[in-house]
Structure formats: C-alpha cells, structure tokens
Image 1 (cartoon, rainbow, N blue to C red):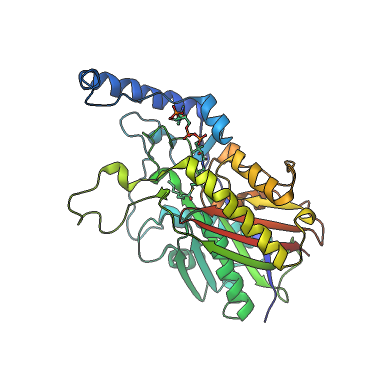
Image 2: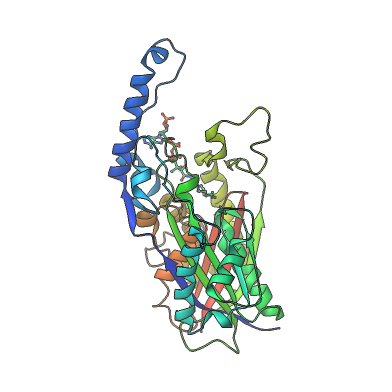
Length: 373
Ligand code: CO8
C-alpha cells in the first residue's frame, strides 16, 4: 500500500462579485415591484406580500459580506435575477470545465506536475452542467491527462468524498496521481427571489492533487493520515431538479427545482453530526483535538463553524485555527473547505496536523486528517 500525500491545491475565483448592499438593493426593488403588481390580491388576502431583505440580517445570521459570481449583471437584472450564461456549442469546453481547468492548472503547477502525470480526474461537486459526457472526462480531455475520470455528487461534502476516492485509488495503486476538482456554479441553482436563501451562495472552483509519498515532489506536502465519511438522510436541504422534471404530472413549480432548505433545522442537526464525526475520527487516529493546528471547515455559516470548532476543541477557536473565507466567497458548496485550505496552509510546519471537514445536503459529512511533511 502506498502513502497518499496532497501535493498541490488550486483555486479559481470568478472576477465579478456582489456585495450584500448591491444584492439587497436589487432584491428589495423586486419586492416593491411584486407587492405593487399584486396589491389587490394582497389586500384581499389571496397573495402574501413579500418582506424586504436586510444587509444587517445577512451578516449577523451568516457572516457573509459578498459573493463571487460568474455573471453579476444577470443576477442583478430585476427582470432576470440569475446568471446569464451564453450557450456554447458542443465543440467548445463547458463553463464548468473551464473553471475546473483553471483551478487544476494551479494545483499541478504548485505540485510541480503536468497534466500528463495525472491518470485519475474526479469532478466532485453539487451541480453538474449536464449528465454526460462527464465533466471530469471533459477536463481530462482538455487538460491532456491520461487514465480515467468520473463525476460524483455529494453536495457540499463532495470534495471530501472526492479526496477519499482519490486517496483510496492512490493508496491501492489504481491511480498514480489523482486530481479532485470542484467547480461550483451555485448562482445557477439559487433562487435569487427567495429572501431566506438569496444571500447564501457564490461561485468558485478548486482542485487538489493526491500522489503517493514516493513520487511527491519537494513542495508543500500533506500526508493523508485518514479519511472518514458519513451520510444520514434528511429532506432539510433539497433540490428537486432532475431528468424526470419534464415528465412529472403535474409539473413542479419553478422554485421547487431550485435549492431550498430549513436553515435553522440544518444548523441544529449538522453541528453535532460534523463535530462528532471529527472527534471520532481524530480519536481513531490517536490525535488529540487540542493538538490540531488548523480546521478547514465547510464555509456555510460563520456562527455554525465557530460552534463546531468549539465543540471539537472544548474552547473558542481563534481565527488562525478555523480560518474564514465565507465573508468574501459566501457558501461555495464543495469548494468552500478547499478554498480555506488553499489560502491558509503555507504557515504550517512539518508535523503540524490539520482537518478538512465538509458537510451539507444528504446529510453528508467528510473528515480528512492531514499532516504537513
Ligand atoms: N433579511 C431579513 N430577514 C430575513 C431574511 C433576510 N434575507 N431571511 C430570513 N429572514 C427572517 C426570517 O423570515 C425570520 O423571521 P421571523 O423570525 O419573523 O420568522 C428571521 O429572519 C430568522 O430567520 P431564520 O430562522 O431563517 O434565520 P437563521 O438565524 O436560522 O439564519 C441561515 C438563516 C443563515 C440560513 C442559517 O439558518 C444557516 O446558515 N443554517 C445552516 C444552513 C446550512 O449550513 N446549509 C447548508 C446548505 S449547503 C448544501 O449542502 C447544499 C449544497 C447545494 C448547493 C446548491 C447551490 C445552489
């Protein structure tokens, strides 16, 4: 059995972003227009008036200040309120492929590798642009990698599950180098007209390269000490988009095929799930939680992350122990914990241990314990 090592990571950040102020101004104009257009039905009690959103609520409830998106103009266009994405021909790389390749190239460069060194590409993320051919096979093709590739979806925990699959393949020798890519275009599946969730998501892509220790170069490397995944069925985060939508009788409402959740219940149920997963995993590896130098947590909600870290550490974490990127990026689904890792790992010293932990819809949660070598 080989010893798997993370040898590089990459991040693609869309250049456009939307502040809470811009987002709320647009949403509140929509509310004003909607309530005006439905004034008579609202008056008659047949339609419920929409309530305005607020910048203060968003920051206090989530810690989010802004989000990067693939198209700001479409999201803030009152008549469209979603990203406008040009349809591409079948002979052109898809947007997900393009974003994933940008992150992959950076991960390979950091590891001192070329695409030809990679023989497994896994695209692990929440939303795929199409069912087939797999986005992973498209990235494999356009990057110029060998071997095989496949897509997998475990919602916000996808990157952790993808890393486990890559680690297992490298450990067993079925792959020489595994690239786990998480291109997330959450803005395309977010209901920007729903006050409860219009502020939650952003777009980004990440990549992680995993190689056996005997091939790993001399860059910043992290040995994977262990991975542990867990799932538990819940309808509290749901998206009913699927290939049978057009066949269903009666047809679903348009907002039923977008992201929706019971945020409060998710908060309450996922905090123990993620913290107990990490505690059990660390215990099985003989690592005390207090000795962990860094927690790269899924970035959905700042209060949630602080509570999870407090339950694991037995005290409040400081910002260097559980770094925050959601203030700038919002929830980028599976990319979030990897963005935190990508931006905040260079200062760790040989021997330092960190945990990447992702959690989300399913429910699903994954813990990856790594040690700087
Ligand atoms: N502005 C002002 N007021 C608001 C707003 C708003 N924008 N939104 C809600 N309110 C109001 C509510 O109506 C409520 O009013 P009232 O008390 O009168 O009923 C009040 O504010 C409080 O609302 P909540 O109880 O909903 O507020 P919370 O404090 O619970 O905060 C959060 C809401 C931020 C959503 C919080 O519950 C949370 O973050 N929970 C965790 C959610 C989570 O982690 N989800 C994971 C989702 S990611 C995932 O796995 C899916 C991946 C798929 C990606 C797909 C991309 C699209």
